[in-house]
Image 1 (spheres, rainbow, N blue to C red):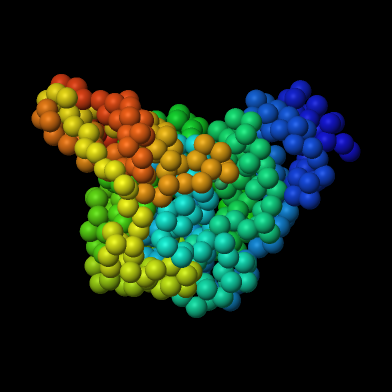
Image 2: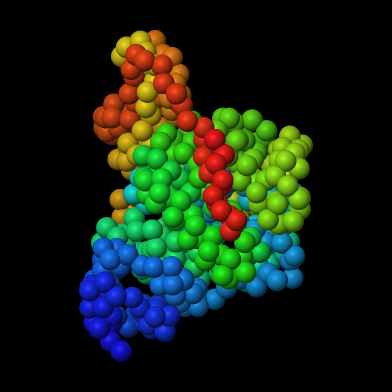
Length: 442
Ligand code: URA
């Protein structure tokens, strides 16, 4: 078998077997194949698609290309994964929150890329916080405090790590089977007993058609079930950024506000719902209503915030971030208000334009090698449906260099659309997908 033969088969619309995917994943993990051949295979997969059996073959092969965490001594290990959004700081809330409710959360997260933010970048804006942990360190920490938030090591699904970098460079990221296999190979390496997926829908999501998003959810549910890991997928809207703060350090501050029992209502709603689903999967509660009460109690009592403090300390960060985040986190040198130029109703706050704007300000990555300015980003004060008057502050641009302010203002010009007619704002949560089928939530 040669990779050239497999590329030709995919090019012509054929399918690879499990054994062939194993050959591909092993070779990619150890660096046997040149990037141009692997890239050609990825492009063939992108154009021709992959059926469910092929997606399962690639997932299993990427999972087996590395090691997995060993957490079977803990009865319930549940994680949440999002397909990527703007202003989405929910992971920072959920890991300590769910752990405080008695279910272990071994969370392996990613970095921001393109217009979407990354949990690791947000965490690394906390002075001292280490996201590069070994598998052994992660296992010990989960056993001790019930949660860990770390990056994918070179030992976890190494084939996915390399394929993802090549997909990024070859514009082959937004392919449903490749996304499903990539996410599930990493999540299954966490030795989970349950997984909650937050599938983003709308203009700021990787996949923008609802049918594709439901197909992605179904595919990942099937992949989880076939590995003995029940999966619940919630579809949530990502037309507009989640919450007010978009960037890195400012998102940590907003996550701390939610952990203190406050924060914007949409971040709170999504955190509570996903957290409740995690508790049900972790068998802490029998239904979402009971789990919601437990989650809300952990936010109100300060138990979730205290667990976040333990997590920050365990990973070398400054625990003062829990009390006075504005003193500890990097702050922007410049902060400029962006005002409404007319009276009207906010019709759109485009997540994609805001996400691209963060990158233009230095708070996001155009390539994996880019260094970040953790203080750069936006504070968005309005959402679709809000009534505004000329001169009202709609947002603030946060940046390190006055010279970049223009890029921030240009992004807001593109993102925020004000019109005259009242608009209907769709609910944040639209569907729930499980092994039993698809349920509407709105
Ligand atoms: N996140 C991943 O880990 N992989 C993808 O392919 C897309 C988002």
